[in-house]
Amino acid sequence: MKNRFLFYVLSFVLAINAYGVEGEDLKIFCLANAKFELKCGYIDDKANIIIEPKFDSAGSFADNGLAPARQNKKFGFINIKGEYVIEPKFDGAGSFTKNGLALVRQNKKWGYINTKGEYVIEPKFDGAWIFAENGLAPVSQNKKFGFINTKGDFVIEPKFDSTHGFSKNGLASVRQNKKWGYIDTKGNFIIKPKFDFAGKFSKNGLAWVRQKIKKWGYINTKGEYVIEPKFHFAWEFAENGLARVKKDKKYGFINSKGDYIIEPKFRLASDFAKNGLASVKLNGKWGYIDAKGNYVAKIKNVCGAEILVKPTGENIYPKNYVKDDICAKVKKLYR
Image: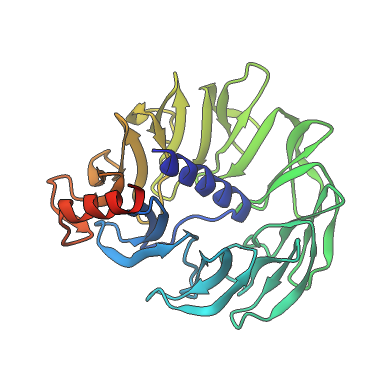
């Protein structure tokens, strides 16, 4: 479905821009309603509905229990009940970090707010991303990237062409003169720029990179390959120790040794969320799998609208629906 394809494109963009992942206990899910509008909510690791799909887009819950969510073209922040705590008034937003700051966009500039919705760092950057655990956030000005502290002051001046921000090990991937390398918190290169692309380090000490042969592999903090470049695309390792990779136009999941735990068979897939679920598409249908590749829930199409069901076919959302009623609504809207 066109709407679902657009949703996953938007989801990937949001994930990249916000450097975010789904909350520890919840995963974002989205369904197309009878009007073919995609609405997003949250499920737990058993695919139980925690917040019904009513948002145009949604982000991850932070430790403070707040998540960015969009309605009527504006972002605000909701609590675990799906209620707005900070009213939707921003043009863009990312999740809160442990320092209590969240990035937001207003009037084409990015800044950072506290949990009261008050600006701590005024919107003055062309681009901005969430703070890392070391208290530094990547921002861009005049097409160059640098790193600021929680006061909004530059600690590393904007001199790089791109970055993915700092990993937990204190290294940040940056691009300079068309090559990617890794710097420390002082801006010094620890791994010289030699990669065509370089992602963040995961908790297991591996980072996904691409070099001349146009294949992706994983390196350690010395810049040495631990998993040789053999994938057509690769991503960061999730909390459960699995990384999404693409080979021969199919998606699967590997462990830190490069062995497939879930064979590449999916047409599309997302990374695993912290609650242990990943979105996958197989044979034209979307669903959610666990770390063993077992389906926890599937998305079923009913006259163009979508419902969430268990692998057994039992309804999850809407809990009680009548197929004829949904079809009648669709027919009425588009006859």
